Length: 75
Image: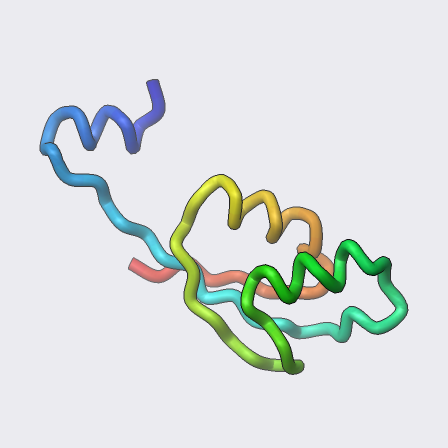
C-alpha cells in the first residue's frame, strides 16, 4: 500500500499536492504526440506556467516531455 493511501486510511484526508509546470523549451521540431502532450497539460505558450493536481496521469505526461518542461511541487 502506498504512503499516500496509508495516510488517507489513517486520517481520512488525502494530502492534495499540486504541481507548477512551465514550458521552457518549444515543442517545434518534436513529434506530434509530444506537442499534443504539452497541450494536454494546458500549456500553450513559452514560459507559461500552469498548476495541475499531482496525479499518476499528469506525472506520466510530464515524464514524456520532461525535456520541454520544468516542474515544481507546491504544498
